[in-house]
Length: 420
Image: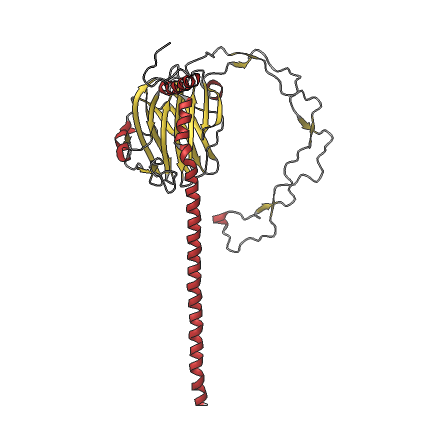
């Protein structure tokens, strides 16, 4: 029988052995996760030593460390917050360079738009280790851009943009981001089998294959250029009704002369030329006549163009991989500031990232909402009290004015009687 080492369970019971093996497996599983970058801003001002603000332009906005107006935990929910309206922001942090070749890549962080953002980015960028942090800007080349972007009523999406051979390729699938003022967890997973997954709040929002959902490569199949559509193939679903005839009174000009108008008396022919009646919209004009449409009895559907293998297509099984990954940054524009970025994580382990999200965002999200609701109720109570106080003051002033007028009338009455 093998001797028990330090920390091993004493006794040879099967239950204790199973428990010990389970614990050992959990420990080994956690130890195998490679954590390339993790930032929670738990050391106060220490983040300034790890993050470098760009100096690419003099009017860049500044970040501050804050948990916001409402939070689940005043310390754990502190993150980088944008602090100035209508500004560009650029800041980055380095880590030991690595390659994700043959490994899963997980990028994860939390975003909180407590200002109910109207237009601005909330995404992150992943850079190579040769990033010039002091000159970080929108022109800085990057590997991956990921995260929410909101502007107006139309743009409310999650960006997934990957660099392939120095060309940026956005995802073709629409992914809607969260638009409320609470903290949300965003996760991007890129696997060696060329599949990807986007999660929001640890729930799958999109998944698929990189080659299918981003235009990295030419299509595998193309239309056969040697084959033409048959001349007798009718692909018109509707045709003009041959029995429909244009009414005789249909043709009317769009504009007619306004004969009710008169030439001005001061009209100068030498200056303005010969006067003529102005043109006005013809009320009888009906537009261009078109015969009604009917179903085409000869319709055969859309012609299926035969496909052949694309001679220009060549598979690339390394689309997912990047060398020398070494920096993460925020390069954004915001009209209304107040967004908080926190709980950054770059790892190769999906389970570790999910657990990390549960232990950070997962533990503070409910208290955050409760605090926000409580603050809203307290604000409503303060507004009601202020309204009541205003009304009471207004009423007292009104009643005081009435009493003064009554006193004036009382004083005037005796004087009038004596005079009488």
